[in-house]
Length: 148
Image (cartoon, rainbow, N blue to C red; front, side):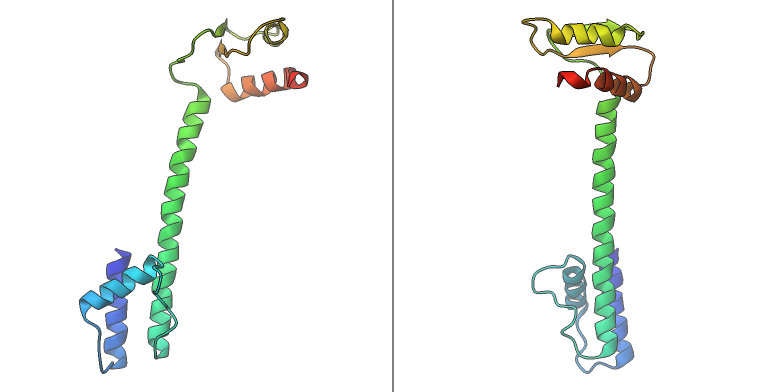
């Protein structure tokens, strides 16, 4: 979309300024693509005329805007996937893990005892409870902070 818009801007500026050697549509499309994609060799300042200079810089800023949108979409997608994994609303695929059912005031001492057991290897502890995952995680980290 931005490439077509950029080529249209280039052609309109050429027509309005009465350019003696106007670019073809193919060249205008390639110039717009090069400016938007910030391709090596694409220069937004080596043109004659103030209107051509302004139009090419506007197209270059469209490219920056396009990159920002793409980067934002990718970042949001990755953030959603990480949040999904941290919410723990998925099947646990672990072996040799300890399952604690429900949450009470004795959960932290039980986890502490498991962690301090002599000869006990570090294995996952899965807590299944009707409590917010972030709240449980912060309480466990707070309760076991000195064991790290």
